[in-house]
Image (tube, rainbow, N blue to C red):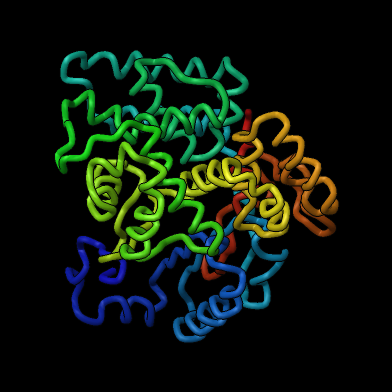
Length: 369
């Protein structure tokens, strides 16, 4: 916990984690195997196998995007492979209700929260496009926050939702709360996006999900001449500090280490940079790389019609394996698990003592233009 900057690090008794693991009473969650560069996954599997051998009898849950590893990749180590189903209508309704219960009411209009909840429940039931987006907790939470922030209005399509989320995170909350440039820097949305997408695209091209602060400041310094409105307000460390503290998109999980608050925003901004740089050949080149899947889908949405046509032609010319990028309901090749029904007969809860590899095939809806 100390390594990831957990605020309760050190509160546990000495040796507590080892005793729980040794007694077989632990539940270990290893999230985002797909975010590990492919060249490092063999070492990651060896690390995981060493843990399993050292601490048998615990419960283990590993998550990944389905195309990141082959079918039954961890079966020899005793893992059951499960597939995450999309949230049902009942589950979406429960999430929305609980989100609104957990949210603080508006002090000026406390009854509005109830109104927003009922309005959003109706919209999810009656608007097919919105219902298709609300398939996982991330998207449901984003939809709830945007619906409240926009006083009951929601844009259509996944791209428009992300655009609205960026606007909400980058500046609207500060403006509406009259928090103006506490660090002496005031930037509109577009200059912030131009700088943030440089960071996102560097991470994607280098197969990374985080970078050190010095590297981030150097990338900002390289980008500042092209963003004069930001360059006029401070040097690279000053502007980066503003992005880190005020953008709502960056965080510092450990000292001098920076990443995006969620991989989705990294992929979305990186895709925008790829399109602006006309890196369509690079996108096609990485069509078989699981870490570029959402980047490519989002690039299709960002691109102008002639650019979109160029990118789609390149993807179609690769091979049948990448058809899932264009039609995510298709399987990814021979032997791939089928799109699951909302309630698989065998269920989705690992049996006691059995580790599980959980893939989120159903958790990524297609990206509407």
